Image 1: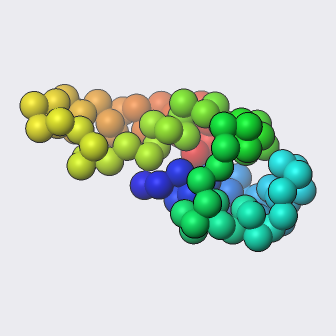
Image 2 (image 1 turned 90 degrees about the vertical axis):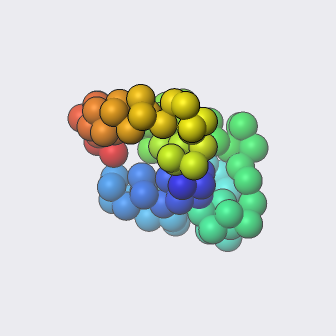
Length: 96
């Protein structure tokens, strides 16, 4: 997943609209939409504001962007073993 896709998922899970997020982070709804669609990559400052608004740490957002394709072949078995547990753990703690 891209960061935009993760943000979209978190917005849906936390029942927050793009309009609400835009207000909370001081950006336009167009800017938020462009982040979600991948047309614009958020700066570290903007990502920090987004993570606070969504109550999810930045490393968790980055973890959620990892896909099987990102993992080296020799580590995929371990990743596939641990990823479901990590996702459940993050869901339980951060309500993702």
